[in-house]
Length: 287
Image 1 (cartoon, one colour):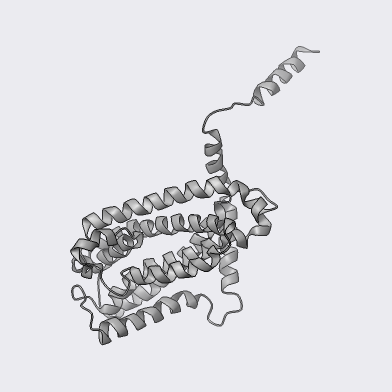
Image 2 (cartoon, rainbow, N blue to C red):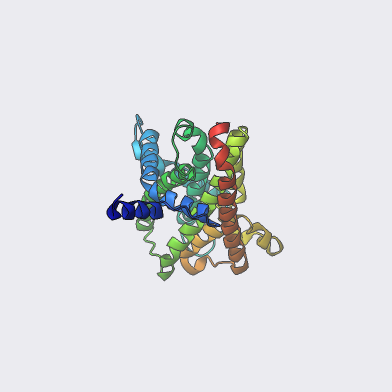
């Protein structure tokens, strides 16, 4: 055997050396999530096309649903109930500033809850990080969220309302709503695979959350002794943050409640990732 051949074999042996290192699988998993990012784009785009396929008004459904809800809330709470509103901002803008994060959260929860079961054929045949399926559902809901901003822009023009410098913080509270939606979606998608009756629980959770979140009213009407506990709802911080960013000083932020909401959102996201990852190895067998 020549020296060149011996050197080549030695080099090949060195290149295929296997290194076992603690935590290596976690690093590889997140590397795979990044490597399969195009699959996330594909699944999200597919769901967008399927959602609006053979519809009469197409993507306008993303605008029509929050618009109709805003009108109903403005009539019931603003006119009939004559509910006190903070500051001088028009009531439709107050309501829609809350509808934006809530509609995003509710849609993401509904879509991501069934995302794993909806891709059962793909999951049982092909390897990819299963985290991509609920993440793609949240991305689809985020697209609807961006489309809904058209209504907010139209309302501001109609009422000649101009937000102040606080609007620059809006992306931060959007990220807070995204973290809450992603964390809750991961929990529900994993639980739905193991317990199929969670498919029927998700609509109840969305409906219940709608009534206990400050969408049609301001969280400032909550009694002071209960307000911190009320802020344990992660969407309270996101909604209050949206209103503060858009409405300005007329909607002050309850600092202690905001800190609690942020902590709950982060905890929800981290625990959702942990639970999803601990159960996803069984998805192909259970489905």
